[in-house]
Length: 185
Image 1 (cartoon, rainbow, N blue to C red):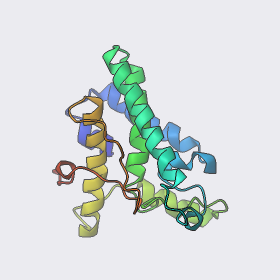
Image 2 (cartoon, rainbow, N blue to C red):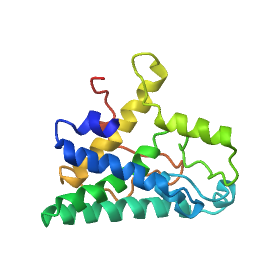
Image 3 (cartoon, rainbow, N blue to C red):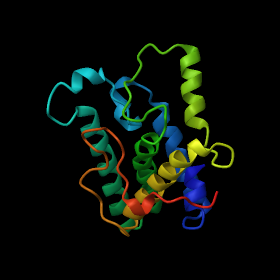
Image 4 (cartoon, rainbow, N blue to C red):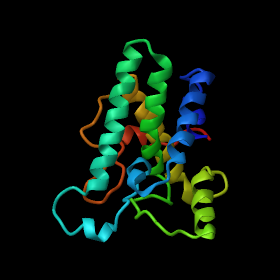
């Protein structure tokens, strides 16, 4: 819903669908080795924090987002609109996941999650933050929609591709302040 809510006045419906379809495509691969695509650790987070180096799970996520955004920009410039939006959709996925309570901040991947835990996880992911009924969800929705707009603005080269998207100390997505304002629900 965030993609449609944020970009419907900027992107034609057929390309909105391409972006939305990529969310499903990326979510189909739910293996621990691909946890970086979902802003999750894939490893025991405590073991990663023992060093002073940037955790591998953040580096992999940064690389995934940067690679897909860079390719999306190149494809857009080359006139390959479908591939451009496919790559943009892939790049958006971990940025959106990074705003979800089920993922934030880079929660450890659960290898043996039970059925009930999976249902709760998916429910939290699939529930669009409702700012009308729960004021606690305002920040979550602003961050989610800000991540979508930020990725799109980078894609359109309205803003620069940052060196990093995540704070490598606290594992949180860092959006520029301009993307942290409420939109009309």
